[in-house]
Structure formats: C-alpha cells, structure tokens
Image (cartoon, rainbow, N blue to C red):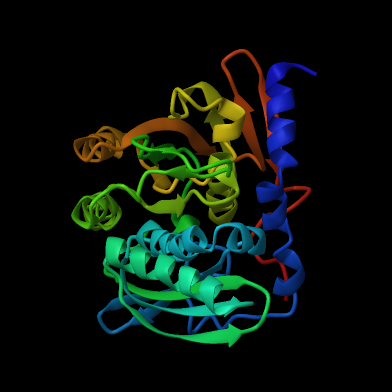
Length: 319
C-alpha cells in the first residue's frame, strides 16, 4: 500500500469519520415536513423559513470521555461547536440552551464555567437549560440563529471550487485531536473572523459551507459534497496546515475555526482575500464533481475516500 492509500484508508477508518455514518440508524425513525424545513437533515443546521429571512437551529453534544477528563474545556467546546454550525450556514447566533449532567457539584461547576467562558468569548447568551445531578458527566448545547442569505450545502454544484479556511494561529490542545485557536483571542477578534461567513453569504460569493468538526477536514468536505449530491476531488497537497502538526493528525483534528466553502471559480480570489485580511489561511483545495466518489489526489495518484454509490455519511435515506 502506497503512502496516499495508507493515509486515506486510516482517515476513512478513524473514529471521527466512522461515527458520522452511525447517524443513519436513528435517522431511519424520523421523517421531516417539507413545509416546515428547506432541506433534509444533514447540514450543519436546520433551516426554517421565517418572515424576516431564515431561522437556524442546531444542537451538539460533547463526547463523554472529554467531559470526564477535562470538564472545563468540554463546556467551552460545547458552545464553540454550536456557534460554528450557525456561522457555517451564513447565519448569526441569537441564543442557546444547554443540557448538563455531572456526578458531583465540582464537575458541574467546571462544565458550566467552560460554557460561560464560551458564551463570553463568542457573544452568545445562554438563556436556559437542564441539569441532571449525580449522573454520568455530559454536556450538550442547542442554538438558534438568524440568516438573510444562506450557505446551504445542498446548493453546491459540480464544477464549483472547494475552499478550506482555517485559523492556523493556534496550538494543539493537550493530547487531544483539537487545535486551539480561540481561547487566547479576545472576543472582538473572534467575532470579526466568524463574521466573515455571513458576509461572504450576503455578498453572494459562496453558495455552500460546512464547519470542520470531529470528522476532520476531509470528512467535512465529503459531507458537503454528499449534501450537494456531488462527488469531489481533493488536492491533498493544497490543504492548509500548521507546520508543527503532521498531515495525518491534522486531518483528524477539530481546528477550532475551520470551514469548507463551495463557490464558483470567478469568486475564489475575492473569498481568499477576505479571509486573508483577518488572518485566516484559505486555499482552493479541490472541486465538486459529477462523480459519485470523493477522490483524494497528490498530482501523481488518486485514492477513493468514499463512494456514494455504496455508502452514506449524514444525508438521510429513509421514507
């Protein structure tokens, strides 16, 4: 097995990538009302048409192992991941609620402290929640946002460029597969960077986006392609990454601030310039295709990451 094949095989078998496929089991029990939602389940947030544009709703839970090991950071991340979902849709967060459980008061206090810091940093009020004392540690958040112009993954089209935008001004967080580029920054600086997503949407420069979460950069890109009903080609050598982190590890990391966008070729230079002005490293890393496969190439060879003809990630397939 050559190096590229080994890399792609390891990423496809990583826990972050495989866990996305498990959503198919509970999704089989649900149906959606096309009169209430614009898109089927599978994007970063549900889109609900409203009189003033669109309401966005999303929820996220943190892996229990992280909550047990680092409750303060887990609380912080619970806010960060939900906020990222709203910005990835071209929206702005309005408010959030939480679900918190803990075996003791000290752990509950640390989780809540982390969430409070996330809310302070990211400018989103926590307006309610539910607490289960004397239970296994856990934390989740639900968020609502608003948008006037959407970045809907289902709007992606074959032939569009795929842009990866990541804040490389950070450091690995402890031994976890996480890149911390937010905790040391001031709230105003974070919000300027996040505001780039709705600004790009409102200028009509991009049509689709996804935030990069625990499925990693290639997982986020694959999910965007799946929602768009497309395949994709990824130039692995173009992926922005920190010099100090090896590629395989980086491709599995939650980057803190990271997004994949789909845009027509004539808009890519302007989008890259917008990100660069706020210190975000962005590059065209591939394109959406009419194929059923997501291919990863390095100029000399290409390897299949996933083929929609054979399997799914997060797009619901039920009656």
